[in-house]
Image (cartoon, rainbow, N blue to C red; front, side, top):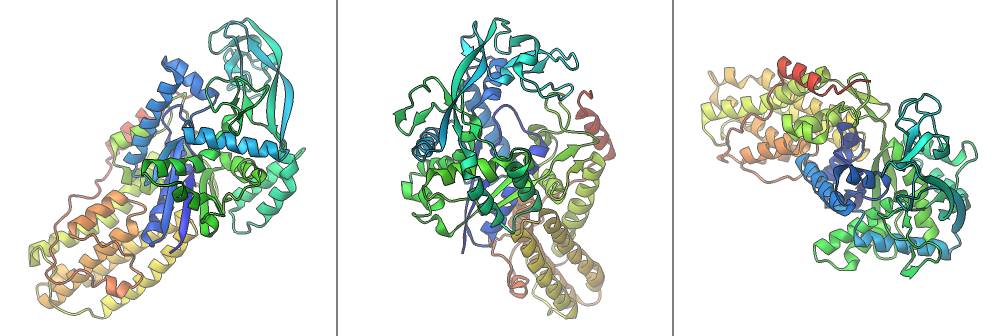
Length: 572
């Protein structure tokens, strides 16, 4: 049994995430966590809400709520949606937790002790009426390039031109609308990443099994242009982790907080400590996952994230851990994903374009979305959600292939032999061939799941469902029963056991349907079918079962057209 630590990119607090966000980190991480548990491994699966930074303050102001209340409310919303999608986190924490405050301050103190923090003076816009420095995103005005009147101080959303706040025409505070602005000098802390460049590069080079997407992004940031740059780790904001050097005050940094990119990855560690606190466990319970001097040396640590998060997890967070000089666990494998696009364009929160997590669950159960998203995961390139493809996949894969088999077998068995596993007959050559085929395919499926090759694993699972249908068609128990009752009973007995095997194999992808299948079979034995011959004889003669409710319903053309219209948003 291995010990596997799994983290997915922590979703930002300012709103409900769309399906592209879900498939880019949390959902494939859940798939892998469920598979590892099914294999008997000890798993710690961690996620949290990322709550600090400018967008959280802006979103709270827009909602007319104190930022602390807004974040608490949205944390619960995101936690509930994660549960709705059956994401099996061991803990879903908050980057605003006291655990994260303390750990972030601890890491900053250690980095300073090791000479890896530099104080830098820089000029920044100050709002006299708001009595605060304004980050670039807090400043709006007219773009000098295209004339768009709501351009931000870092970029114009209309023409995408990169901007400085001083470039804006008629600049004003996004908080109050005040134009009473001036440029003042302020001091910030920078993490001296360049000092760790060679060490980071050697570490990345040692990861020969990482996906090309992951390493190519890391190398680009290491080498392109002027190469890896030092990065600011503080901001002039009210909401965040106060700047401290460990437990001590940091002279000159009063009133400042750590930049969100610095504290957010540390929350992975803090969140595991939150898990220990929530379960009344001692410090050693979380330290054995993260401290290599306290048991984490034998942990395999796997991260899941979209490609936009790769630089932080291949460079900045490792720089924080390495620079601390302490024996913290570094990631072993980073599974990164490209983007999921929506129906000929992009998901857009501002335009309401695309399907968001709450909307998805309001129209169909989680398994329908889980299956499509995972079987179309954007691994080697960007992928695209279309309603036609979604309808076809649900109707053919879930309803016709898997759902139909479960329904046919349980209904036929009940009508001919009653609601118990029939005793007659012996398995013959057809059953032996199916069992052999299943054995090789299950081994291939497990290999693909171990490798986190999500789309290929989904295809292999579907193929496993298909060979069961082919067996039923070829053995034709509904015809055989008229002339050879014992033979029909043997076919049905194998088919009922096959449903149980399908439940086990399918659970990482479609947990609700899998549990309904297992419940209908009156079983709670989820043992992985390494010995497929024994697994196909697991349900004994006379074992009771029931007919499950329809596992999957088909999506109608009318529904597809309605949803396509409803979620099209306001196209620009």
